[in-house]
Each structure stands twice: as C-alpha cells, then as structure tokens.
Length: 590
Image (cartoon, rainbow, N blue to C red; front, side, top):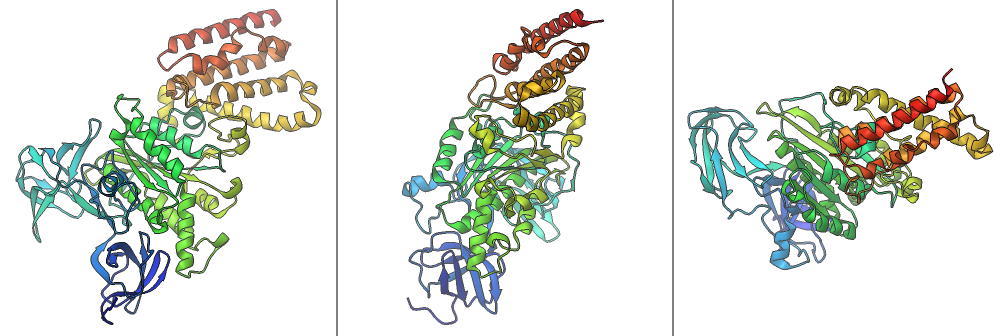
C-alpha cells in the first residue's frame, strides 16, 4: 500500500495498540478511522506528530502504511429514544442490528447506527415558543416503551429562548423539534443528542442518600443495605454466584432503569443473560423487563480495548436517564475483567507496571468510574440517582489482590461472597462476617418509617451471628454439649437465621422476592424467639423445650410458605409462637 510520507498512516502495530505518523492535528481521545475498513480507534498518546491509538476492533491483517483518518470528535454515544431494550457492544454498536446485517459474526469495520434514525417517535411538547429554557430542561416527551416516558432535554451547554417548538406528531431522531435563540445564534434541538463517554454529564448538586435501593434480597436490604445513588462491590471466587446475584438485583431492585454491563465475561454466561433478560417479566408491571433495561455485552473474546471503554459507555447511558429524573441501577460484571483489559493495554503501551502488573493508574480509573454514581439534583432541578454495583473476580477468591483492595477504597457497601457457603448451597453466599454497609445510618429513617425497630433488630441479628462465630471455635475443639444452654441458644438461633432468613431461593416463587414488610416480620419472628428464649433459659427452662415448640418448624418454612401478600398468616404464626412461649414461661415462672 503506497502512502504519502506526510499523510496520516500506521507505522507500528502491537495488537490493539498502533502507532501512526502525520497526526500533528490530532487531539487526545479523538476518534480516528484506521485502515481501508475504517476500524474505530481512539488517540491515547501524542508525541510530536506521532499518535498512539487504541483500536476497538480486531486489527488482524492491518499492516503498516494503512491510512488513518481523523474525525475531530471524542468517543461519544448517541442518546435518545430507542436505547431502552437494546443490546450494544462496548462501543455502542447494536448487536441485533449487526446480526440482521451480517449474521452471527461481527465483521471488521462493521458500521451500524446505534439508534434507528428512520423510525418515527410520537413527540408531545410540554413548552411553548417564547419560553426561556435552561440546560437540562424538558421540552417534550416520547413514549419510548410502555414503562419509560422518554424526556427530551435541552442539551447541558444550551440556554436561551424557544423560538419554535414542533407540534405534537411523529418525528425521526434527526428531525428538529425545537429551536433555541442563544447569544451565539439559533440552535436546533432534535430527539437525539451526542455525549463523550469519558466526560461526566453535569449536575446541579450532589444530595445526601436517604433511601435504600430495595432489592428484595433479605441479607442485602436488612443487614447490608445500599442507598439509591450508592456504590457496592460483590467480590467472590469462581462459582460463588456473582452473576446470579447481579441478575437477581437487576430483576428485583426498585430502580426505574437498569443498565447491565457484561464486561469481559465468558461468552456462555453473557449468552445466558441475553437469552434470559428478554424473557423476564417485570415484577411490578408484568411487562418484559427489557422495557426498562439496556444491555451492554462485551465478552472475553471481543477486542480488549472495547472492554475498557464499555464501562464508560454504560455509565454515560445511565447518566442520560438520571438527568431525566430517574433512578438508574448499573451492574458491571465484572470490573476485574475490565482491570485486566487496562493491564494488557498498559503493557502494550510500555507503561511501568505496579502491583501484579496492573497499571499505576488503576486506583484513579476505579475512582473515576465509581464517583459517577450518586444521588443528585439534575440541571432541571429534579432528583435523580445512579447506583453502581460492580462484581469483582479475585483469582482464587483472594480479597487481598489489587482490584478488590482498591475497589474497597471507593465503595461504601461490600458484599463478600464465600466459596464455603456456596459449596454448602447457601445462597446468596454473602458472608455476613466479612460484609459491611456504610449506608445503614443513611437509610435508617426510611426503614424506621416502615419498621420502627429496624435498627435494633438488625444490630441484634448481626450480634447473634458474630457471637455464634466465636462459639463455633469452642465447638470445634470440645463439641456443643459442654456449652451452657444460654450459649447453645445462640447457636440454635443463628441456624434459624441462616436457614430461615439469610438463605433465599431464586427459583421459589414466594421466596425469590421478599418485600421490606415481610423481611421485618420474618426477622422479628426469629428474634422474638431468641429474646423470649433467653429469658426462659435464665428462669431455668431447658433449651430442648424451646426447640420443641410446635411453632418452631413453621418459622424455618415461613419464607417459602407465606408470600408478600400473606402478612395475616405470618401474623398468626407469630401469635402462635408468642402464646407457646408464654405457656412455657408459666411453667417456670417463680
């Protein structure tokens, strides 16, 4: 291939990293097109007209001398109606569109528009011409799905007076629906806008987190809650249930919008996600869950550079819906694979490695990702939130490795998965001794309005589990029979907590989702037995009689026997237990 010496061209290739000459006009993070196929790349280093470019597609058959074309824009995503229900790769190429165009394999240089610019959407204006508009203000709405009313916003950098607003009707994404008079001249607003993925979208202010993200998973909501706008990590070794836990959270959490990022996961796991999510019904509406979900699939066999950017693509889409006043939950599975992509790219860029070969910038990159979560006031004055839950896959389940350690610096909720619990078929396999949440104080008022004794019951349950762990050390040495009944009661109640409260089946229709009211009723049942049983033991009642109360087996079965709408039946079980405990107390009352 003949190329002029002063025209932009490739001079060196190292996997997804290439070096090009003749790019004195290039800017950092500018998108370029490489080779005859127009492979998408991004400038990551500049040096006297030479540019280092990371390419988001397969560079096989690319040769030195291949042309490089500047685009003049940073890597950006298209934002508008049509995002919900779509499945994208790491650089926002729609996988269903690629399949329709070229089949099951993504060809090099494949170009499919992220959004369908020919489809017409029904636009309903909410402002009239002559109104003064500010950045982020809503000028109209579009029914994107039966569950999502898409709000058409004034772009963040735009303010002025509306000269024209389109009447209600059907428009394509490219049709202007409004015109704003600004100091620099008139600006048109279409249903679609563009935003660079590495730049956080602006907000008015950050707010205190006051409300939990209700997930329906008892161990999370009650013991280790996460606030709306918070950050959490799910670390765990192979087979501990990270992906299943995230699926449960994505399905049942009360966020308005779900963004699921499959970042570097195995192809069979991502295939399972892509097959299951379109079939899952939204528990609140009965409609398909995909009517409020965006999927980003970048598997481990896809180009490594696209894996690196998939995180930013997902969080930018989340920010767009947050700016519409929505609560968005982002699930990244997994940030360890993303960090491995950073490590590979850093090695090819010949950067100095840090711990275990990861780049020295790993903590900064993790912080930049997690800090885009938060509960905020949008530019339009509404409340919106982004909650980030990142899965971490430490090799061998070693939580001392760099990704887990650095992640803990930037998150406030840590759900540590345990291989021993997973092997014992205890799911979710969240270890209650290694996990923590710093949001308990933030959401205490919300819980207190629904269960005044939430804080006390939570503290009591954690205390029982911690005391049981210490007693187990003695039991392993001398057996349980040498312990007094007061300590054996703790062992008994801890087992009830594990079997009747902490374990939860994703395949049980009544147990897969537990609303906050039922969570507290179940916990109150077990702890009432503990508190009253402790008094009985002090009065001289043998533990065996407490264990043989007729209502005790019903406590273990209650999570599967009674659904969220069967509170009355749970109340009767509680009354039976109280009556039996009182009768037993009468036998030993002095």
